[in-house]
Image (cartoon, rainbow, N blue to C red; front, top):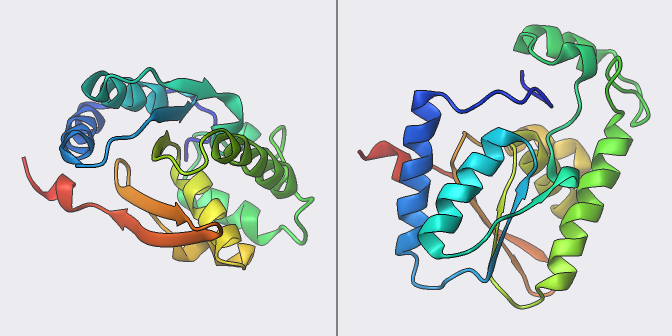
Length: 178
């Protein structure tokens, strides 16, 4: 599990970036801005998309994945064991952040983007845990985050009319082609 580990994209990841970039470049409605987590795996993805769409990505620390602290780089089973021990949103990872801190951070970051771009189409390149958590919150039950599992470089769309309306989650049809 990666959290704040800042590993570069693998060869497979670079291939996936090319695929999502082609998909977004082919969209008829153009985005007016692109935001990204400040972690390099997201920034690399956002840079490729930005180049194709002639947009300059804006990196934001508040869009980072949850800080797993000492559990960065551990197996999913080890992380799941730590999660089972949590009894409240104030529980957190050793030398990392609490669930409450994570939620507050990503809510503020996304709220700033939404406020700055009311009525516009914006691309936000973020991590699976961020996507799952914010979709659960926007769906009205932050405990539903496990229902929103997304693959790397998949496509999720949310419309704000004015409340969040989830259009699609984790679409990966563009990843099935070469």
